[in-house]
Amino acid sequence: LVSVLSLSALAVAAPKQVSIITPYLSSVTTNQMANAMKEGMEVHGWKVTIVDTKGDFADLASRMEDLVSAKTDALVLVSTDPNLVQAQVEDAAKAGIPVFGCDSGFIEGMVVNATSDNYAMGVQLTNFIFEAIGNKGKIIALTHRPHPGVIKRSHALDDLLPQYPDITLITEQHVEVPGPIESSRQIMENLLLSNPQVGSIDAVWCAWDEPAIGVAQALQVAGREEIIVAGVDGNSQAIEMIKAGSPIKATVAQNFEGMAEIVVSEMAKYFAGETVEQGDKYAPAVLIVE
Image 1 (cartoon, rainbow, N blue to C red):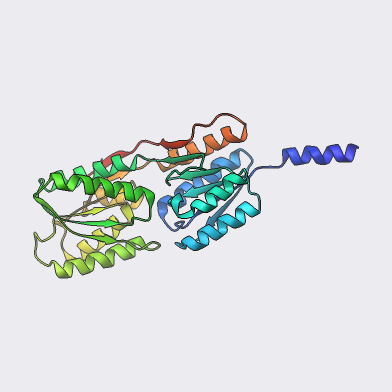
Image 2 (image 1 turned 60 degrees about the horizontal axis):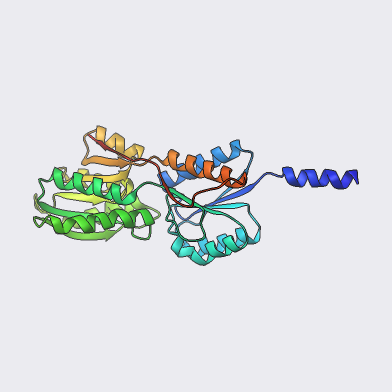
């Protein structure tokens, strides 16, 4: 009887197993969020595993299925559109496994998604770019619409453009991930070849900072630093480039550590049996300029 009771006590005391999964761990900010969550969760004594599928969404779905089968105690999707793994989110919910998001979207079956107000950040970014070029000129947009936050930022640009008839969107280009800095640098190099004259491009709207870094590198090499660049995230390298007077003139800084803290806090409430209000929870963002 004593042996049975001891085993029961050990089972109750077993640490929670939390699985953080993302296709974008190579991204500076995604890596920052994942590791900030891991540190915060380990303070609670939880065992944390980070899974990176390196841009492979089929593998993302497969690994989620594996984690559900392994009966992980909680899943966290980072920088991922949950609609791409809707069936897996539903399977996790049916298995009683809570699914949280960090810088992701929110769909039925999830508990909480901690993020920024991405549409509002898109408005901040777009307004900065438009004002910087005097509400007239030619711009380029670099996006990655599979990312839920980027989609909302891009929608802000889509909505504001018709209000400025003197601003022309020359092209929207898709940035490859992993490798967004290199991808953006190559995109900009090609666009500069087809737009060689000063005044042919006035600004580059970048949905996040890594494309802005790649664009700025291409502009500096080509001597086209009259072109204004801005992005979103508050990436430390981008901020340093703003301070150094590079073509990057602004970034909308997200509070990634704040997002991680929200996930950890809400998960702790969930594990404690407290009521958790479902949906998106926002960490505030701030515009940083030169």
